Image (cartoon, rainbow, N blue to C red; front, side):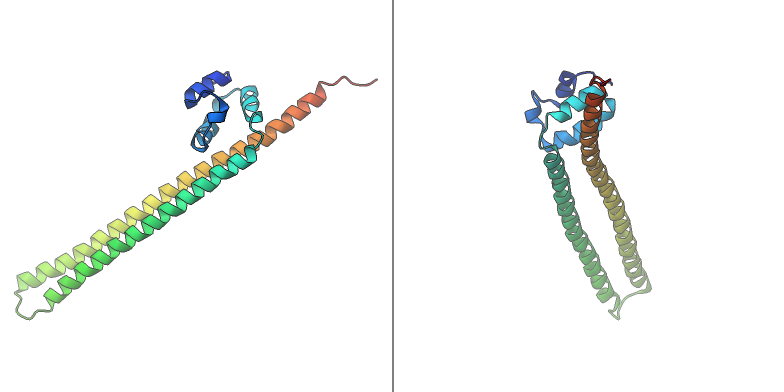
Length: 170
């Protein structure tokens, strides 16, 4: 979709005016920029005098959310690994009992192996989660940086355009 005016963009973002543009919607706005007419995008960005601060705040919010998620994930992973260690310890204690049949020993050994396999799978799953999380943070930060570049580039373009429209002195 090609956005040709501010009203279409505000409607898509679900806001009535640019004062209602939250940090979350700012990132969405950045994602929409490739589909905007350049002049419309520049007009909108020019309405944000503290745009740099706004973009930096958005990056800070993403960074805090990322750190919080990583911290919660680390704690969760520690609980999982501790639970597997405890299960293996119980199985090992049972295995050390001297009056077990071959079938019982085989069963306990298989359960110990199974916990190792499950823990490995959980670790692989966690690494995929962290990879996806990192990609989202990089994308969000990239959007904020792109907004900054567009803002600065738009000002330069507007200033250059203004200079070229001045009459030449003979």
